Image 1 (cartoon, rainbow, N blue to C red):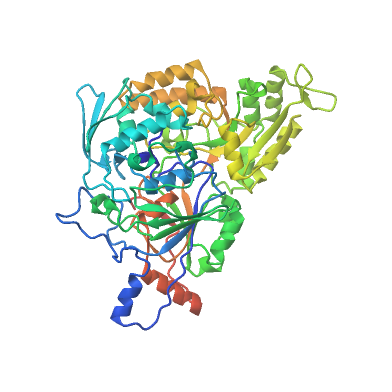
Image 2: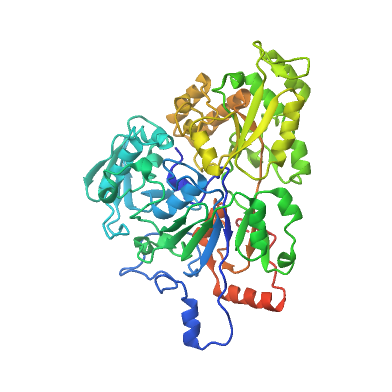
Length: 611
């Protein structure tokens, strides 16, 4: 599995992506010093503007990507996409749920924000046995649950038991945790974890284990835990959930983690409100009206055509592209190869050849994307696989492949198999924008395929995907800083309910390569194995590969403070809720400018990491 420490605000995003929204400004004008101080503290749940050093000082190293001048307070509203069927990332893994759960529950360690080293979160120290098979973690004695109970080693044992319980719908997490023996609580603050087999990711798997409140949750039905999460150990807790409307997360004034130097300058907003809507066009209109503060744009045509409105021209709304080193995954239409009509790789390749990606990129996306020629684009310089060319748009070649696979046209040109069954395809889709799919349908139909789009709510789509009940489905997979291909591509995951192996890949060659990389501790050699897996996947065509973008496009009202690197080195737009803060001076200047109609200095058009 990709551990939660990699997901913690560097999510490789699946199809759901968030957009952030508004905080109404306090009025400005003449104030005496006492009133000014009161206004500055408005909304700060603790009454403090910054973390107060505990006796003996802050613990550990600072996060070099954070700005310790950040202040607490304010509210920010995020677009949460469609209404979730659950917030439980462990039974319903989405990027949105991972963000929410990452605000509430913490791992032993997480990857450093700028290096490949580890930093302690709930663990203050750790060691690895000489044989590399046993890991010992010392839990911070300061760590506390929101109900005041201490975080103890047994809470991590309970996490492992919960994930591995056959009754619990946690297949994605079982993939990695099954390599570990049941952890042992040596004492209340010491945890030992032993691996069953050698695997380069064993330490990351153990380090990424999360504390679950065993004193409060033991004996309850984990599958039924959908929206109620208490107690928590992290910086936020669920404040209010309104189905089909919104979710409010409240900053915890009593969070134990303020004692860590690593958390200084982070988690600053008092309230984070997610509003649910499946319509991205309405989201942009809400931003224009000032109802929302920040909107990450994932639609190139909107960025090119609809983002030079008056507030942008006056500098009230910043229009910025952020370039950093965030891991890039792949996106495409997953082809359900469990179904007989998609079992032949020639059929799947033909479906790829009927997707006119270059034309879509030019006409709909203003050539702002690069066409994927890899399932691991981060393996290659400039994300361009030199050993492969993007699958071309080639309808004639596609027809030949379909004929070879037994699909021949009848008198009307409709493709049929040897028994006379028509070739029918349904594309399961929950988004509002179907322009690309409509073009694809035309090419599918021209080739003799009876194709349609089946639109459903996000929650209904997720349920269908968990049950593997689909033909094709468009999904955007994120990537971690450490690539473990097992969960997405190993045959053992192909038929599990809720699996990430959506395409149902079950290939002996890929299985063999995955097994080979498990015991390889040399990162360069693992990358070489991943390239072989990539080459084999390109032969199998489990997805109709699409495209990716090399930057993060942000629109935001100019009322925020942020570090030098707005999304840190490896972050995506979710990093906003970690590193940014509500800047009262900027807010007052913006409020005044909007009242007077005067412009503000424009924000940089591009923000490049390290520059």
